[in-house]
Length: 117
Image (cartoon, rainbow, N blue to C red; front, top):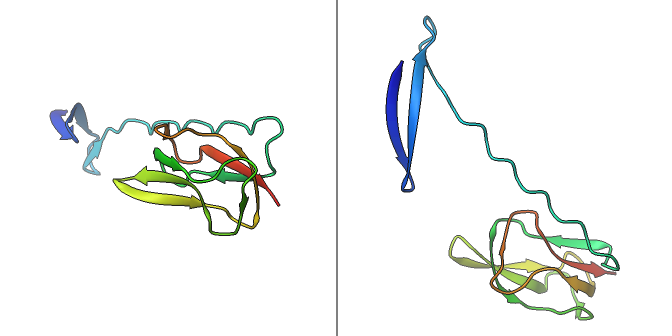
């Protein structure tokens, strides 16, 4: 067995590699972290869900409940990897609920808003 210290983005990991023989060295890996489940839509929310496509920070809520939007209109703006990324209405309709706040950090798949046709 060999021990290694690996630093990834400033985090130090101690890794042990075991030689199983014959097929070479097989690294030991940690299991992938489980993703948090997206919260359920609140009662009275719209039928169409608008979810975060990537993890980020909500920098602007561009529409409010009751706002009529067209397909492609920004509903929420996220900062993802230092870039502002609009999360848009998937079709024409009316925003039923906003489920996030400016400054909030969200995970990929998080429910940001709902809307109705």
